[in-house]
Image (cartoon, rainbow, N blue to C red; front, side, top):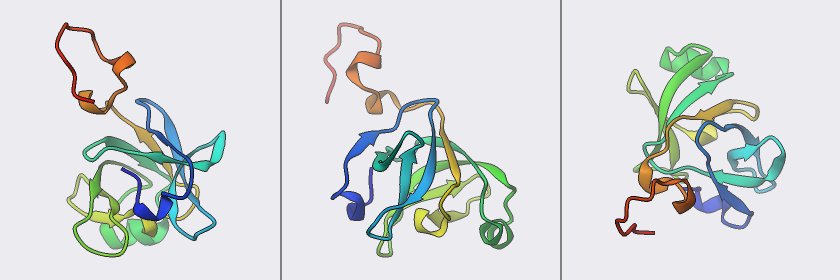
Amino acid sequence: MCDYSLEVYGSQPAREGERYVTSRFPSGTIGLTAPDKPGTAVCLACDTPLMIDNIPTELRSTYKLGDKEKAVFIRLDSGSYRDGVRFENGAEVCLQRFQPGCGFKVGALLEAAKPVSARKRTGELLDI
């Protein structure tokens, strides 16, 4: 999922094991980008596991976090922006609260979020 405010930019799906960084787009929205494609938004599926590093001091203090934490990508139920993360301590934080330059390493993607070419061929029909 990419926040609706990033729809005007090119996008690509996140890939398992890749590391992305938070970037500020010309619209002012914070989103994820690949280091080699700074103008392309990276979209994550809900419940994608993440390892986040370089967490801003303000967030670490407010939510009792370390500089590096495990989290999952979530859709927030309220607010202008819906992309967020849930840390292991239960804190839910809007992606807009992260400053540019925070690292987001993608863990194992859910099977349904993987491209067909990356899925095991089992003879079953796959919903796309």
